[in-house]
Image (cartoon, rainbow, N blue to C red; front, side, top):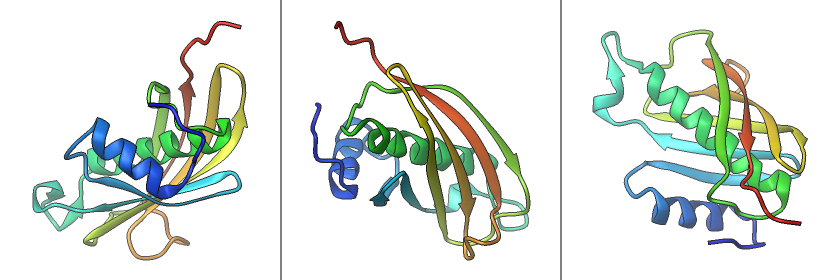
Length: 140
């Protein structure tokens, strides 16, 4: 599935079709950014009421995937994570997890972005990361 309509709704619909049950949604896209949301499940809460690291990592990866589409101007489901590093800054406590990915560079074969994850206050991120997505080879 390839489309030129890079909207939050189109991204969420494609992701739901390609990865049913993943639980991540794209809520907003704009010039050089994408915002993702996840309603945290009880199984994703660790002792102390903290949202698990893998849950935060997964949402960060999803947000970077979404911003990849913004960067290349089309929804490309076969864009793949090449690398992603994340730093956990403080405990994530809450029922909703958010991530905002910003575009650092979009090239012919790869897209680089930075992501911030939070629960209640975007000015107090629970994790930050940076990653690269590789684009599928398209013959010239």
